[in-house]
View 1 (cartoon, rainbow, N blue to C red):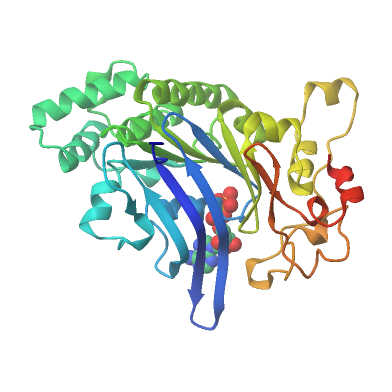
View 2: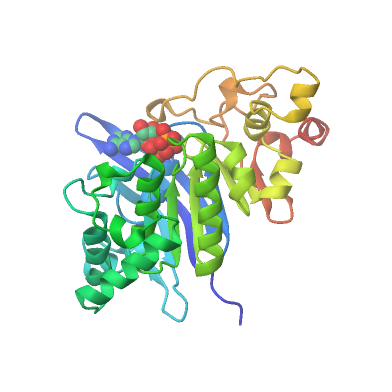
Length: 342
Ligand SMILES: Nc1ncnc2c1ncn2[C@@H]1O[C@H](COP(=O)(O)OP(=O)(O)OP(=O)(O)O)[C@@H](O)[C@H]1O
């Protein structure tokens, strides 16, 4: 029997209601699969639905949001599958998952750390919320976690407040808290974006090491393809709420097939491009608003290859390699033009 994947997001749509306008569909028909020990990166420009997708997995969406379609199937090892999409955000079942089996880290550590409690007390409390441990036992675990995430003098540092730590150490403390209950899945929303390059590299290395030690899956959100190259096994490229291309990271980087992925790749510096003195080409134009979603392919207005069906017909998901899919009319409608993307 083939093991079920740890998390399977199936055909998920997320909509926001507003008192005076029609519902806005921020994410549509998203299908993603996460496996133990592997990292899936969600990448795309600001506002394309990366955070909303990730927050849906923890049922941490804003009040006016709903999962209007699809399922989020979570199967922890040795347990029954649960559809997170069908759970209430504040239900006991969801609280038993959140912070315990699935936890999340953010760009800004202070969004999960309290400024008025020591980091040790906060991590102890998180452990005792989910596990039947005495305060002394919890503190031993906390000290060991702080040590694992590379905080020097962990026993003493446990008694410090977040503001007494540097940005990098605060980020490490947040990671320790997220790992307190050895989650099966860690969701990381731009955890290194606010850090300097050296600290960013250290935190990425730390996450990779912890993933090896704990065997957990990671859903990693970033807008930085350099970070994707560093950490991902699989990548899903999002544009205005659609996953426009996804697959094995090596395959997608080697042969990107969607014009948006290709444009993203041209917009990052590479050694070869520097050596050739080639210019970076930023993607012209801006992402349309989800309120005025184009009828067809959302990338049409910025796409150098757009042709007749693009503004009006939404492209289907097309298999372009093993486990590699993309949504673009050039891949289905016109075999001669498909060569433009090869
Ligand atoms: N509470 C809300 N009400 C209405 N629309 C919302 C709400 N929260 C998010 N959105 C919309 O959902 C869309 C996706 O937002 P999301 O934060 O997921 O983007 P993102 O790709 O993570 O961008 P960033 O990199 O800037 O975080 C955006 O158009 C955003 O305006």
